Image (cartoon, rainbow, N blue to C red):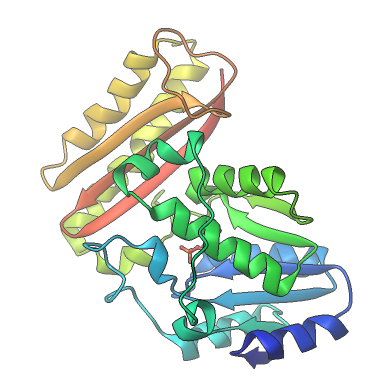
Length: 279
Ligand code: AMP
């Protein structure tokens, strides 16, 4: 495995790499969710390129950029173990030096949910992922459904800007007790962690109700809210039941493919989770 820190080194390796080239973008602090993407890329591609970059522009001023967990040595070991050929680990200066004047901004789906709660977040994501696509020029890029809205945002600008990459969405990896794996889970103390299980329990309850024929959006959202509101340490940012394509909230009966999602704070730690369902 080769580790490169500059765009020019990456381009030189990319030029000589065997097609298909698969890219797995990450912010590091790798867990089995990230590694499931690496393994999927390994199965499907000739060359697997991972990126390791905690992108400052997708964090708000009061968010956790400076304390985001970082352990490059461990991350490189895991990338290598699971078959990565090249890791691109640039500095902030390498990515954003030279006073950039350009941002990739989306309206519509990027303005709801996470976009409403984290202004500028998806501008940061869309810009850095566009840059990674231009730098690496992968044939395929792998992203997790754990970040369901992010995946939609990426699919949208790839389509709108005619970027020649196939975006592959991969299922959410969970702990045996249901907690979705996240780099931020390391911040949770025992009480927070126990109460954080209410997110996946809420998703399971609503999934079961939908399977039993419950269609009313408010009833389904209420099942999730009841689980989470019963946790004394949970502060809910939102619980959403939205159309899978537009991410517009359902009122009345749900139809077609729906995404049930939430963001909940436990102390300073903000967790998100979601499930996609067909009614
Ligand atoms: P991050 O390092 O948080 O930016 O995540 C890098 C990639 O890993 C994104 O495409 C995430 O959606 C994906 N990812 C994060 N957590 C999980 C998970 N539990 N299961 C599957 N993919 C995940």
